[in-house]
Image (tube, rainbow over all chains, first blue to last red; front, top):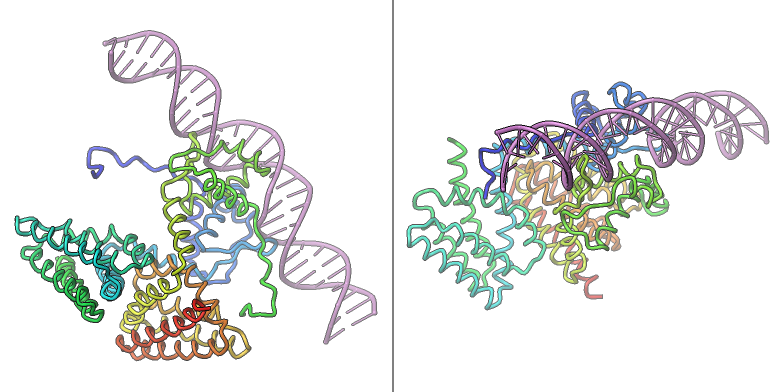
Length: 235
Length: 235
DNA sequence: GCTGGCTCAGTGGCCTAGCCAATAGGACAA
DNA sequence: TTGTCCTATTGGCTAGGCCACTGAGCCAGC
């Protein structure tokens, strides 16, 4: 699956406007420009950057779409409030170190809610699917496997049982990130068994139709994964 | 300040490239273009749309930044995979009759967590921004406004104070959907005052560094909005 | 038969030069 | 003081042109 080592990483071709946009963006940061501050006029800025007005204009469109600046006809180009937000986010993304905890937090927020909704809304079909996933994981673990796929199926079944399109979509959104933590977590000795037990508790609460218990069980389950992640973090 | 009722909505000035980008985007949808399909050459497309190549180029930059197309030097402009996914999902949710409750649920899941994290992690700067938003909304409500923008700022400030990139991103993801409910909610008589009071409670819990209280206050606040939404639903 | 180099047509990248349109702010008249 | 007008400044957009990259087809060499 993964495009592994032998191939050089297909050197990316940057368009000029991208460089210009980046330069302007960092320039805003470095000079500590706040929301409302003005950029130099296009003509001057273009000359200073050594590009044409057309190219600068493209860069400004890009920055405008991203929400860094606002271009006002006849007035000028001003830095928007949205800027710090995005720049801070981009910066944080670069720091992979902080990712694990964030993923855990987010899972906790979403899945706790999902579990409690599932407890109230699950149909018999939902329950059957959850049980299937449980059995699948149990068999896998029994056979010495890590139960990765079963884990995935279980959470998918619970999410489906919550019958919330939006929550499901957001879970899907962070699916890849979760997958990474899942692989690490279930790689720890003894983890698959613990995880399976956690799943059983969640399933029982959902079967019993007890939202509070389901939420609590899910919270404990996510917290368990969190432990593993933090251990790794400390290495 | 606030763009409250009496002012016409500051007639938005659309730059040409925005129209062009929109037209191309809908054209892609209408003709059912799939990922990998090619757009006509710039020269031809510009002529067909009746704009210059430079303007078309700006539109393509915008679409590229948003992730709808990919422009390949010397090859052509192709529709990317990212396009249909987002547009189709958002559309699906928009059309979903039960979307209000789902939005509320999701807000509850995310913002409750965000509030509790904010209570633990907020810096003085975060607190200042929250207070600013509070003051802004108070002034607006005082003046008879609905406090829509203040509401938005407040939740944005709290989200920022949680210092979780991922949660912020997900909130941003459903931002448009929330905006719709916000307009409806704050349109109810007496709502802005209630909402403001809710915000104050949340802010105090965050200031006190009490995660449980912050989560509880946020939950109550979201629940209040929910009431309004359900009333509307029942009409 | 396959490989690598060459050419060429098509396409985007970027530039120069210029006119049009919106804005803000000052001058000025009422 | 108020309202109007003018004007410099600034972005919006166009036209036309040259350069750089890509892919396909052809061809010589192995």
